[in-house]
Image 1 (cartoon, rainbow, N blue to C red):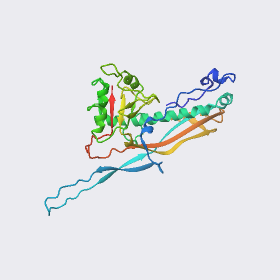
Image 2: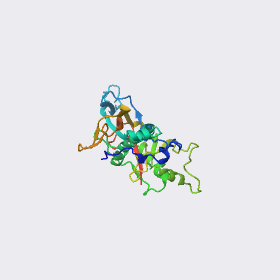
Image 3: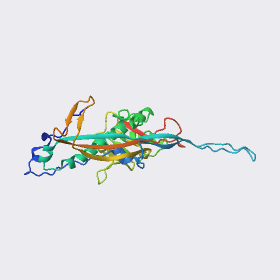
Image 4: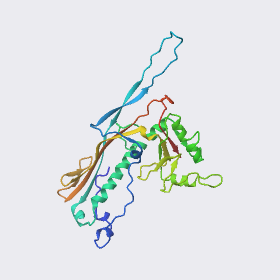
Length: 311
């Protein structure tokens, strides 16, 4: 794992380092977590773990046999699911001389990118199990695959049918008793949507004036923060409020002026005081869980509120 990365003079281009040039940095829009945009946020956690109740058994009603027939009993039950907050962090070291010689707000430029990096880590873990903590649930794609909620575009090359027909990914979610409230897709899906046409050559999927697409009227987010593996999935759709997340510690920044930065083996990489360096530390703690309660449409163990279009 890297412990020796830092912002150096070489990272500041000549244009940025010289005061006679315009020092405004035009950055692309910072992409945050697509999952957290669509999922349901619970109140902040008061401790590292919090529990939520999920419906696991539903009441059943019966006809009564005649005027004196016996009325039968029924039950309703809940199971417990635990949300565990895990820490995501980053440290950005920089020599004080480099910081002093720069005529731009380096920290102001770095902070949004750290936020983007955290969003990428969150999405990678929740969607694809990339470096996911063991206390977190299985990733969405892991569970989609385990519950056979995938449609292959290679086997079903008609994109419209693969997603929106009676045998498409939307129908897989609906058959489990859930509603499709949105999709997250790879950037490459934009080209597939633009190229999808009727036999008369008319575009099937229309883009709105703001440049967005919708599937059956529901929002689709094209993942641009780098947290997407197009080899694994092209698009994930489902009922996103079934994913809940809670924040234990919102994103906080602390400027470190003393201390050492070392690797896992204990080797000191930077000594901030001795090397005249400072380091910006960012910490963020959150947890998530998926509800997936039993419902009247599907009480089976393969019930799942998401499906995926795969290559």
